Image 1: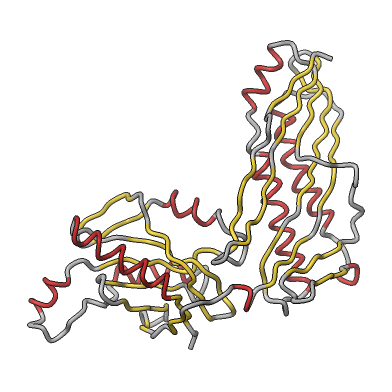
Image 2: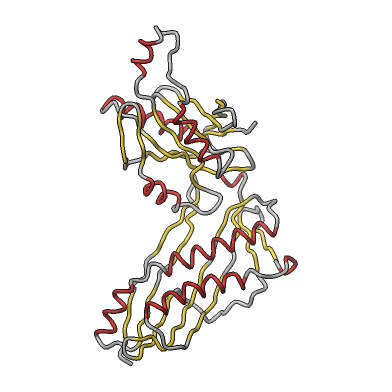
Length: 336
């Protein structure tokens, strides 16, 4: 059976959110449990209340999937949403209906079971917490229905007890010199990003060199692919002939970071870093404002630099988080 570790601070957030909303509106509330998985064990280090709802009443609530997606994107791989919590704000009704024989409505409904089953298809240990604002119940998925399990409450817990930060430094350039429309150039650049990252990580495992720090909290992975040291920024430079692109150069200077067990295999780490590198490059590239590039062309610019900014990982006391740092000037055009 999986072990559930729950920090007291996260528990108090859940209880306070449920109790305050029950007293103020009498509505069910929803929120997310954030932490990380270690094999089948679940470590819940924080709780984040939902603020946007598709529907909300005394006997049900559905949080915005957009808010959930945005929350998930705030955390690096292997860290983030590990479960969902919701409240049963009908404690007094429950006491009355059961004649006081059951003091708390800590049950999992069929709807709750279905939600947990769908989430557990992604991760077997996905956690569901039910609360009435006074106490809570933790449930894990099983083929026969949700199984209640008692969490281990702790005052403090560090993700560094289980996870190590693995990172690598990527510096590469992509060039294209055929005359195409701006739209075609953007599509081509996206495709070439994916192709280049695949090429970078297509190598023998024996080529990997690892350099952990003394405490093994951070470990640099040195890949065999030759890094282009001259690349210093994340940007694409378009050269135009009229309104068409005659050539472009796309550069990335990034440090993808993943969190995994220090016992993770080299193959697993390579796959994680490959996914993170691809996602980070595409996420930065997607921030380019193509319409602003078009406006620069109409102003007479022959060369347009579109800067993407950068993505960094902040090692917070509770959990590491991803932060986007925008460029000082996103679009710069020149006439020659």
